[in-house]
Amino acid sequence: MVKLATAREARLYGPALAVRRWEYINAGVYVFATLLLASSLAALFAVGGAARAGLAAAGVALAVAAAVNAHDLWAHLAGVDWRVGLARYDLQLGLVELLVPAVHAVGCVLAVVAMAILISQACMSPLGEEGYSYGKERHAANLVVAAALLWMVGSVLNACQVYERADGRAQLLQATVQVPLLLGSLFFLLAAVANRGRTRSPLLVSRSWVWLSLLGSVLWLVGALFNVLKVFMMHQSDALRLEKLRGGAQERLSRDREGRVPLNWEEAARRTELR
Image (cartoon, rainbow, N blue to C red; front, side, top):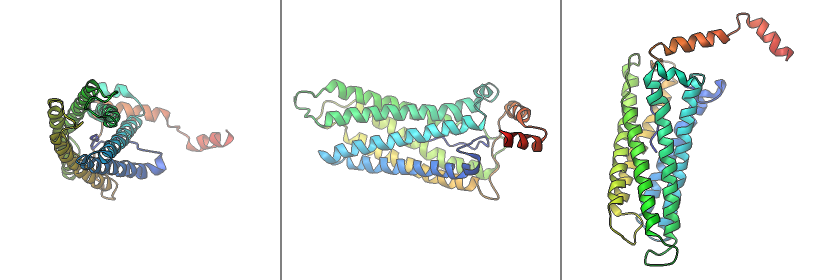
């Protein structure tokens, strides 16, 4: 449940008059999701009802993170007027701003499904009670591995951004977000692989999975807090210098927008009033 961290100028998180507010909301909700995930993973050290509650809370945190990443994808599509074809001219737009949040959101959905399977299994005894299935437990473990792989791929793509215009402050803030998210994704991948390789056990998840995942969630929380700082700095009077589209994509977008701007603003306003 990592998050896109980009220094792009082309982004639109909400209506023009409330775009800052919605970007702050996006960053704040992600902090909430990572904090809830860390708390829920800590609860997995308990047994019985507390462990089931921890799995349920983790599922909620993952669902919230999926919504945040979907909002990131929407914001960057809206920032380029939904012209996905511009990715042909600026590969980073397609591989980072569009692909990364999509990959992260899909990973979160897979992890939510895995949590749901584990919760259903937690209500039954692994010692032979009717309804319990080691096969379902194995499916849940595979889903967790797939989710962790997607988060890792997204984190690597997120960290491979090229800067041509962004100033030193913007690049430093980018690193403070990207590095914790990348390390956190690595811990989750290690945890998922370790959990899948364990032998049959009365515990639905191994202790090593809980510990490694808890470390990963703490790193994600650190990245989320730095992301709030980055968003704050972006909206100051001496705002950071951010990246424009490259490869001719910015020029094409500008020409398209200029073609939709009326030359006579008074005439356009009069027509709007008549409607």
